[in-house]
Length: 349
Image 1 (cartoon, one colour):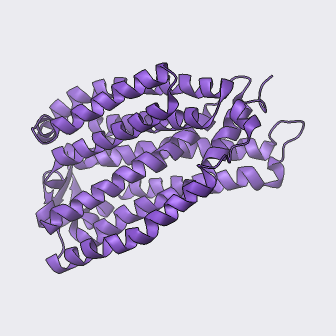
Image 2 (cartoon, helix red, strand yellow):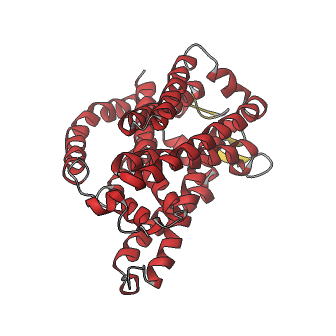
């Protein structure tokens, strides 16, 4: 029971990271693909939306790593060894992304001249966009690899059967799906935080990204049936199917809200959609951390350790959650995006 609670806590932290940091990655995606006469205004809106809070969202990834290391040390060791390359590429992407975001804004060569970004801003912007695209793809590939069965753990050591476990069809499709979800989250959030023509720009991008999410979902269904039958049957089980049904309903509501130009409803539905999809995956994957060799009970630490983590987490959350609430209250819920940026006047014409 403590092991399952610790696993559920890890899944909850993963959902929080996807909902918050996923939108930040998506903002970088739309920054890279900003087009049209308002492309500079689009990038300004993305920078104003992300700037105050985006680094704070990585606290949830740190929490996931700490929980794995403390509560499921053998699983942590197997994942670190078997997915060494993609995990380190993810870390590199996060580092480059943060550095590029700052240097693009403050590098001497990034200063605008005649209303246009400097050469340094364009170069750092390219790094920022590329890292924002690659990182969520790699994270999705790692998630797919633990479900596809290609990462085996024999005698406590990770071993790949055949090709690299993260470069197989299902992990690759999961990476594309993660990219589409991040783009969708960001576009919906940005449509909620902007106004006028900029809101219409991001609303159209959200509809396009939502279509990509549906397309990637359709692509993944036969891959799940062929390459991960255990997960396929788990998704159809009485435990996971209701959660996924709620996620599908939330996705339909989100799409309708976008078409009806109700951005706040679309944002709430998109959060519910993402949370339900990840929760459904976690329920279907249970009891495996790495299929088929590493289970939650088999990888769990001593019960005393699990109980200490579970009892201490509420005290940590009592400090973390009010701090995050205040951060968002100060920098997000008050109007920090200037009106000219919200309207898109800076880049129009």
